[in-house]
Length: 428
Image (cartoon, rainbow, N blue to C red; front, side, top):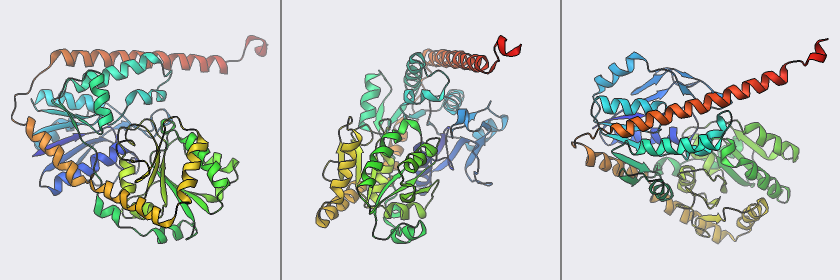
């Protein structure tokens, strides 16, 4: 099978979608299939990549670590025709996702969409961040899903949400699997030594994209409270994003910079060693669609303390492989949960770790890839259903979002000009 994967984010970008696309692509190839990834250009990407086509993009959109795709280059069409895809798999409902829909329509191919993200929680990256824009984004993602022949939901929570939003296309729950072999390896002691973390320290860890929607202010403040009363504890933070400086400043103001150990980016095999260096993994996001980093932690035998939210509730079982705290928990409750785990007898901690690994085995990448391939196979050979109404709705919503975006961008620009413009008295 020839699978065309189209995504707005890809390695070396740090984030769940990029890692998901990479993990599935690699496993599909191991299982004997051909995969071509179409993705934007990113800083520090490899000079030579096999089976990847990069599209020119505007880097660091609006001060974030995302890219915005520029008009489609002519060479993409020729590359797609040469690849002769059987399936077009889109990982976003806009930008490259729009290109994916056009390719599927042009060549009469099945279109698959993975609803990775709760997109309405990311509108703060757009000037204005209005409720109207949030509604448009939800409608856009829903109409895009209804344009597709199959929709993958990364978790049962997202499947329920999509049905509530009236997605009528077939939906299949498909978590991003974890490479058990890779994450079971790793040398935590050597990693601690390299990071100047005491070998006998209690290490709390977090990995992911460091952005405001991840609820990291809450997490940082909870950790400050915990570290203040636990002198043997250290925090290992891995990831990149525009919340990095805020987290570092929080630890500096708390007088705890020496116990914050920060690494922007890690790849295998160091990533496994980083997980192995942790005693517990903490997670406070409300905006996830799946718990990808949580299953990675479990694969390394690391229990998780998380808030009850989509993505976490599917994998974290309270007082089994970790702690699943109420979504409205305050920072004291979160800090107390970390302290409670630290103070458990070693036998109880060992049971937590064993249960964590048992959970990871249920989310192997091999199992997830086979589920996805079966989903592809079920729609191959069927007549492509052209949906002119959905295409029209998608185009209209995209246009409305563009208008909303430009409106608030102009307002913000005018406000900035007004503030920076000297008043009449100062000119005299």
